[in-house]
Image (cartoon, rainbow over all chains, first blue to last red):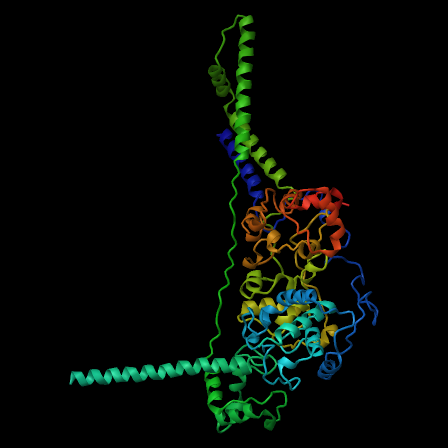
Length: 194
Length: 416
């Protein structure tokens, strides 16, 4: 009888051992040298407790190579002013290649709402985004008093940078160069597309 | 008499069908008008967008308390400036069209979508250990035979009775039965544990931690077709494919606040990271700097040790790989997960490129598998013109260059 209990005891201990090796998806598993995987050095988006490490640069700081040619605020007056005054920076080259890159960026960043052809029929399926105007529309729009087909590059760039209506600002996602490429693609291909 | 009855009945049914038909047509037309003229600023029961919620506003005192609600609405929509509303542009709609829109708004029932959240669990069965075990057993059995014959030889020299293999086995078992059983079970289990432990070191396949927000890749990238690079926008430009910051979420979720309570609760967490309440507060992009922001603490899923360098831009922008080739079909899953190698082998892009992984995801063997198989486009990249020319001269007569030929297996490329 004692022996039976002994055996049962062993069996229980083993069962617990096996239970410990469950494949829960919350567990990354055993790491070889964990200090290499979770090192104290600060990587991108990693946790730290250093004070002011993430504080903003001094007001007016310009990152190297990021001097903007587009100095307008998000207000409606500046939107209209940008449409009148602003144009492609001098460093912007209008070539077939730029157009291709612009198309790639447009498909990546815009087409899910504005549609691959710029007709406003994107794949995003939500009532808020069910009435996006087409770039080739000739219907009068409220903001400029003109229509979508006649929007200037300054208008488009301002909208991408600061957002408009239900569209958020995209300056966080796209560099200025990338934004101008998208604007170029819209003007060349989508506004002229009837 | 019956003929008459029948005739009237059929007429009656016809008339009913006719009206029903008209009614349905009006509904869908109202929907069309609403979507093209109103939906940019007004939701139906979805809360304030740019203008007020249409359903709420139409049932408010301001509209209902007038003597002629429809007439007032028609005047209002045709010329809002008369009512002191300057934000809304005048709509060129007839009274009949406005009535249709009103019917549509009244009868609007939000669509309820079911999000499938099943995650496939691939069963893996490997035969290799079994074969190894059989070979080991065979060797051990031979050893037993040898030992027994040695024992018999010794006994013979002492002129004791000899025993066959079977007899000596039987004797041993009868004396040490319990020890054998316990020892055997212990040995096998420990070996199994050890094997699993060793094979699992540094293998993170199927790792899918619970995240602070029940985000669904299936809903965003799958059903709504948002490109991976939209949210993970730094993948194309930098080493890291960052987790999007909360303001990227707000590009849509400042106005998309979720249909049901569960969705509202989850989206509310993004608002909370701005110090805002989704129910009561308004989100204003111009005030972004004044919000008391706290980061959303996502849990990192893909984690390489510090001694391995990986660069997303080099693979996505220069190499032209699709995200799915390494991350699996994320557009069919919920929160981030490390895809298994078996799963990656089924991805169309990988089949097209002739890539087959033999090693677990995120191990070095896995990287090497791809670097040995993936062909490189040697044309059209100005940055590498000189280097590609030299490599072509080095490998004369070779047409398809794989990554290892351009230095993809050099230690220093990833470990430095």
